Length: 466
Ligand SMILES: C=C(O[C@H]1C=CC=C(C(=O)O)[C@@H]1O)C(=O)O
Ligand SMILES: [Mg+2]
Image (tube, rainbow, N blue to C red; front, side):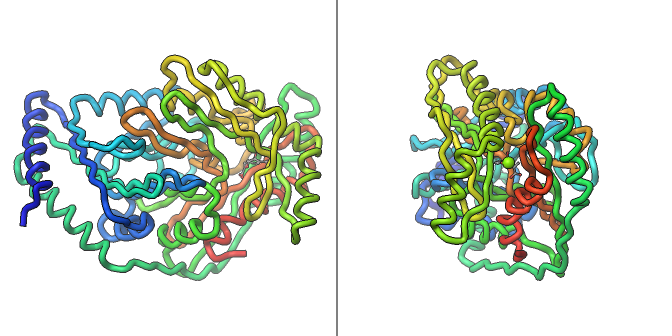
């Protein structure tokens, strides 16, 4: 049986083909439909046969925007460049020109949307660890499931080239039908057994922190974030859907993200927003300064109180507030910024937290703001450029996408980026987890070491470790 919707799709695809031939270049056709409820994690898992290595997942802390993307309709990638944020943005805008978008809904986050991220520092010497990821990597998915405030939409993106004929239309319908058939099956993937957890050079890392503290006392550097790695071995391949399932259950108050590339998968549960753009409003988060959670409510409250008045942590936090304020002031007419941090309490840790809202003037694009903010002193240090250079020089770890912006951008310029911390890279039967901490002049290497141990926990637990 052919549905009305299929007839409309056919008409639009004929138009897209004609346009591609006339203009002599690929043309995007994008269609949005409203669906009955589909679990986005099930949607992600159902792609494990046909779209493995070409999937992404995103969920914000309040479940306002949940995305699962399957297949790559178009990839945007840029290696080492001073202008990688601008290049991605311009390529995306250029690609959208003359596209045929059928989206009768007014919600943000449906229709053509790219998802991906950037490496922390494109000038850091590359190692094999991140060889499957480019410095900037975004996907326009073939199929995007968007759950927006509980409503479910499916966007289908197809690209017509000047050489395509009607066979492509048939292929589209067949593929979409197969996708829905695979959703009927129940997909549940178990985690393999964790065989070994290895800390990478912990003593050397503490020595680097000690040396950094001395340097910070001499100035002019004020803060440098130093990170380290845990390497895990399993008795079988770790499926990204199994880890995502756990992250979603165990860290629901965080941004949950996953990005597959060439067989590897970068994923995590980050509490930290870099920037969100909704029309003319910008939202950012200052998150720095940490303490453990208590074993009981009273101990937890005392630890929180202590954190709120601890000079070392307040300074670590203040550097972030000043930098984000300065970055937003450049583009915003008005900024709402509380004068004191509050506490953000999550499962394994509590942080000093200051939310920031900016009302932008003029045309401030999301990726321009990402460029302006990345890395904030919560991930890089202060001054920004010198701190990144210092990290490049002294940190043993190849950060790749860790501590860098990960998120989405829709065709109307709205979107959101989180900072990819509390994260890890899955590589077959192995995984690397990453955690860092803000080192300031009165840091103590042993406490910073313990702080990073807390920050490994969300990923470690999701992978079956302790
Ligand atoms: C760099 C990380 O955390 C940052 C975010 C919150 C608190 C931080 C801190 O207190 O050091 C870090 O700046 C990480 O989790 O790997
Ligand atoms: Mg800290």
